Amino acid sequence: MKGKHIGWIVLIVLGLVAPFLVYPVLVMKILCFALFACAFNLLLGYTGLLSFGHAAFLGWAGYTCGYAMKELGLSPELGLLAGTATAAVLGFVFGSLAIRRSGIYFAMVTLALAQLVYFLALQFPFTGGEDGLQGVPRGRLFGLVDLADTMNMYYFVLAVFLGGFWVIDRAIHSPFGQVLKAIRENEPRAISLGYDVDRYKLLAFVLSAALSGLAGATKTLVFQLASLTDVHWHMSGEIVLMTLLGGMGTVFGPIVGATVVVGLQNYGAELGQWVSVLTGVIFVICVLAFRRGIVGELAVLIRRSGIRM
Amino acid sequence: MDIFGIPIQALMGQLLIGLINGSFYAILSLGLAIIFGLLNIINFSHGALYMMGAFVAWIGLTYLGINYWVALVAVPVVVGLFGMIIERTMLKHLYRLDHLYGLLLTFGLALIIEGLFRYRFGISGESYPVPELLSGGFNLGFMFLPKYRAWVIAVSLVVCFGSWYIIERTKLGSYLRAGTENPQLLQAFGINVPLMITLTYGFGVALAAFAGVLAAPVFQVNPVMGSNLIIVVFAVVVIGGMGSIMGSIVTGLGLGLIEGLTRVFYPEASAVVIFVIMGIVLLLRPAGLFGRER
Image 1 (cartoon, rainbow over the protein chains, first blue to last red):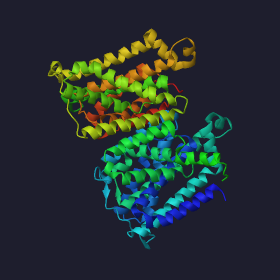
Image 2 (cartoon, helix red, strand yellow; image 1 turned 90 degrees about the horizontal axis):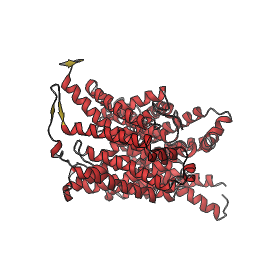
Image 3 (tube, chains in turn red, yellow; image 1 turned 180 degrees about the vertical axis):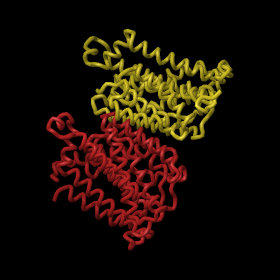
Image 4 (tube, each protein chain N blue to C red; image 1 turned 60 degrees about the vertical axis):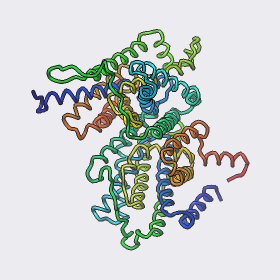
């Protein structure tokens, strides 16, 4: 049995048991952010593109899903679909513009575009501005399962997360994923091998945006709220932190990173203003001394100790 | 008198604000470009250091009675030294890594600096009085020009073109340009490149702090004043490209003016106009108006 299979089994068992050990809403929050971080990692860890604007996809999909369910009365599965599709379209627009520049400029372009989306969310009437979209109904899944029940909701979120994670896992280990890694390692070489690098980058960007949107739409369903917090650039920074801390370019790293950061924010709520400082300190430590992240460092330890996975 | 149905006072007033914002865009993007040229790092903490400049000036005035004129010189030196410490202790370990790590580290630093000031001073902001010498204004007949605003624009232009002159026309500047092109070769000629890098970072940071002191009497001094600005400045940098010093100055001022005009003719779009222009520039001229791909 390979390490990856063990990872999957641990993940599923933990996912099934967690709501009996921890407050279920917290676990759902972790799952949403874990999916978001994994989608982000597809871009940063596997394609080598640092997007500083991923909050736009999370937040905008959240608004779309919230609006579709609250104002149009759609069912939850259609709400999620609407959110995901909107994020994919937005990702196509962002991606088409941003891949025209590389490296640092790519990060700045995505950040600026996300700020544009933030101002639109602030000004458009349907987002509710500063108040956000409140009281979004959870509805009945396929008209059958009542999601207002916390445990029903929990297992639905778990299924969405595992589905999204499976897509990412498949993408990483497919020939498509290999090309992405080739672009990350040596872009001129990938071009000279005949790959249409821009198309691969754009496809990765759209996929990442769509799955971030799925995470955002699910989050709206869980909290019955879509707000400006999710489109703010702080959120874009947070997702970079989760991925970096967990281990970018590792399959399970972002999940670990999301769990640590969300857990920290939850139990460190009394820290108040210090959360931002603490986040900054973790950033600095990660960059200076801990660039492989938690899972990356563990993998190195395991390899050194000679255990074969 | 009206122009396109807009009273000329309103038009001129907004253009003036646009020009002031443009001055800050110019000074900040100039600093970013200088730092990027030599260190290959985009200094995400630039906004936080600008805020720090404004706050140190306010603290100096409130607790130590240091007046505006002294602060204008002393604060950039103090904040610049702080920047040099950051460069020596942290940034210098990153030069051999991917550029993105520099961005991430300075982002973390920005969160720390902003968080500390927010913890100490809260979010509401403090006001910094306009120095006595520059209070009041000129009546130009068609508009009222506050003295302090005229001063901000004038001194920004002097600082921008002074920096341009130092970099493009002096011996010291030629070292800097040579270091941007090929640091190894410059080192081989006996120039202390690591020291130069530290001083350059310090200079870029000092520019940000200087902009902060200039901004203190115009805007509210508050802990988030920098982070809102820096994202716009990033867009300015993408539009202008970081290849040329003059390009940064012209783009900064120009975009400030465009933003001011938008506020007159279509206020709803004024917050986003620069980002929209960035999108158009990326479509038509991906390397930026003055940029060269590197």
